[in-house]
Each structure stands twice: as structure tokens, then as C-alpha cells.
Image 1 (cartoon, rainbow, N blue to C red):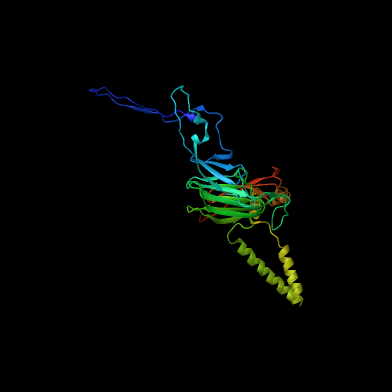
Image 2: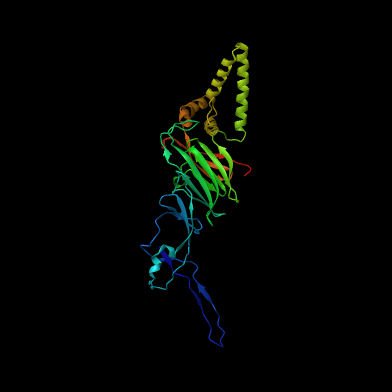
Length: 350
């Protein structure tokens, strides 16, 4: 722990009966020039200071409680080489004041000590708790094979001034990479959360009132009306197929079974993967003007690697601005064998 040299102000006072110009001099910057070792610190897991330096974030050793401190800043000062400080200077509470201790984790959850995001404008803190990972979880409901599952992941939005929990957002049977904030990105009041297990990007907005509001979900569907369009089209196709089957057979049980088989076999690539493949195809298509060369180029650069493109998964996202995301794709095993970066327009009204 270091102690800065305290600023000094020097005033020149003129002798009585004389008129002399008065000048004030003071230090504009405080430079660390002394270190205190072996400070008695609480047995906590210290995370970091907030970006504005107003709060020190720490967690209890059992990862159940959040403890927040506020620096008291300049507690001791000295002049020149006078380093004689009292014994109290080696105590943690000489430099930090505990504001509160809040219990975040409940049931069988623990705090993710490597995750913390700070909303500087409102002095909100975003924390995460989760249950343990299930590495051999079955890939059901559109989940990616080989990606582990976490039964419950909870994001807690907390007002750092007084420790009040303002809102929570829960994800069930999912996997979000919380280590070093890899799976979550904050831009102003917008939050992007990447579900590795279900390949979905959840866009949330942090309101000034302290609410976490769902804005968009990008993955299986990209545009707001994609799901409605596909469902309507699927129903029309089912009605047409049922009509044809009804004309050729009077067995209604067979019709129902066949219709269910059609719906179960009618699997599409996700909307974001469709956009990626279309972008790659159009880019290769535009490289050649000759039809024969264009077909050969598509065979070598697109169709030959088609399955590699299909197998790509979303690993990380980052906001470029309020309307665009930078998305990193990679292989399931996390290798760098093949990856691509893509930008996607996500919002128009937020």
C-alpha cells in the first residue's frame, strides 16, 4: 500500500507597510513515493476498484457475500524524508471503510469472483452467481454438443452506493462464459450476453430505474418477425400437405402422424448462421464476373468448406456502437482452426 506526498500550499506574505505581489503555489499531481508492506487485510477475495476509484469490490472466501469498501484516501502525510508513521498506518481500515456486506448467493449457488461490470453513469454494479457445471449434459432443445451446462446462472444488478439489489436476470440450464467477463459485454446502458450452449445473443438494457429489460434475442431468429414468418409458412405447408394426404387416404391417424414427421424433420440452420453463409456466398460470388470461373471459385471456397462454416459457433460478441455487434465465430473445441468476424445490425429503436 502506498502513501502519496500530501499537497502543499505556500503563501508569501508581504511585510507590513510594503506592497508585494502575492503568489500561491500548489501541487497539481500527487505522485506515489512511499510503500507500506505487511498491511493487515481482511480475509476476503479482492476483485478490483471501480473505474472511477470510488469503490473496492471484494467477496467473502466462501463466495457467498459481497463486501464493498470506500477508500478514505489521504490518511497520513509527511514532508521530505520524514517517514515516521504510526503503527495504525499498517491497518487496512486506515485506508478503507466498509460500506456494507450483502449476501448474493442463495441455495447451491456461489459468486463468480472473476465477473464484475460497472455502470459508471449510475454507479451500478453487475454481479453473477451460478451453480456448478455439468460437463456431460445431453444436448437437447437445440443445445450444442460438447458444451457444458449450468443449472442456474443469475445476474444481480446492485446499487453500489447503498448495496440495494435492484433487479435480477436468471438463465436456466445454459452456459455463459463468465470468466473475465468473456461472455458478457457492456456498452453504455446496453448489455450483450452470449449463450454458448444455445448460440443466442441476448441484448438487455439497464434502465436508470435499475431494471434489466429484455430488448432482443439474436440466434435462431435475427429480425423481430422471423419467427412469425416461419411459423406461418410452416402452417401453410402443413395444411397443403394434409389436403393432399386427405385426397389420397381417408385415414386421419396416418395424416396426423405424417404431419408430425414433416414438422420434426423440417430443421433449419439458425438465423444468424443463415446470414453468415449468405454473406460468405455473396462475397465469393462477387469476386468473379465470368460464370465458369465463378462456379469453380464457389466450389473451392464455399461448398468445399460448407460443413466447416456450418459447424462454427459464436464464442464472443462486442458492441461497436448502439446498433452493431462484432461477433467472433470459432470451432466447438475452441481452436483457431477456423474463425470469422461479422457485424450484425441489431437495433433501431433503443
